[in-house]
Image (tube, rainbow, N blue to C red; front, top):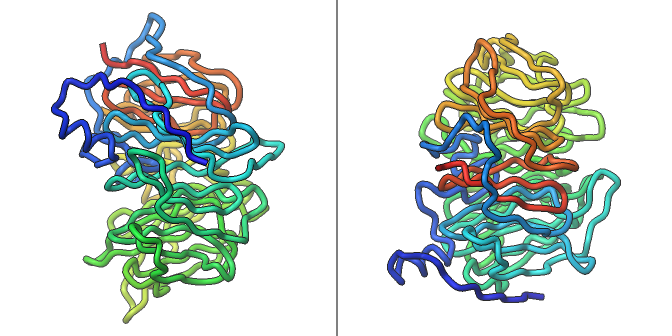
Length: 403
């Protein structure tokens, strides 16, 4: 079902540019997918206020129903998911007002004791929006209208449902399907025609992660029992390592930098840094370090100037990327979400407190502490055009951070 709710435009740009923005055409300043345009949690946003001593202005807020989805922000549109009338719903919202532009009830509800609804975040690319439902329906819709373009169905959801978002890599839409649907599977992003599938390991909870090494594009799949790397164009597997975690929860975003691949999980598994090298038509690796310094159950860390910043299942930490040395830790901030913007950490705790402070390997001293939400806040916030988008399971709020 697709319900369209046109809203009055408030733009002062030209009609042509406005139409392009409405259609989901991505610009350099947009945040079109989970963890940002470079999949690294680093925003290009500058000039926002970092030291709030008065309440932060709320531009708008609205109920959307339960989901763990974060946000994609493209032009004057915000995309997220919720739940309504026992259906998972993909929403397109007006970024100025929060009004519903359109909504698409795309999959039967999913309920779980830890939180109901869609886990994945919408992905926006060249006028199309992609979303993977908790039960395994991959849907591609028109960004301007919400009308379906194509869809697929996966059949091997992990225990806590499909959670990885769709990766757009060149002409391909890549997802983690699992087992005989393909550990990783790729489709033509415009038509949905199958392109390749790789592996038969169970799906994990992480979004497929792209990187370039020695001039060649690869995609990492962080799966239920392992991590694998495939050629982006063909899906040919070039590397794999066993990675067993309690409950098969591998959910944090991998990180590639300068020939090194970082992986982290929670429970008792911890984190490891692999140094990659070309070995014929494959890749090989050497483990540089492996420890429990970061137990990232599901939240992803950000690599910034050689240091990892993130909230694991115990605390907020700074860890040296190349050595695994813990630089500092802040207790009582488990399972928070972290962004880096304009040389500052933007942190949302799982209890809904916003903290902003300078990035430093010597410690974290917030210049802002503000209680912005209540309830469970496990979805990463997004900072775009001076606006901070945050949510708990049921409610979305948009704050004005630029005066």
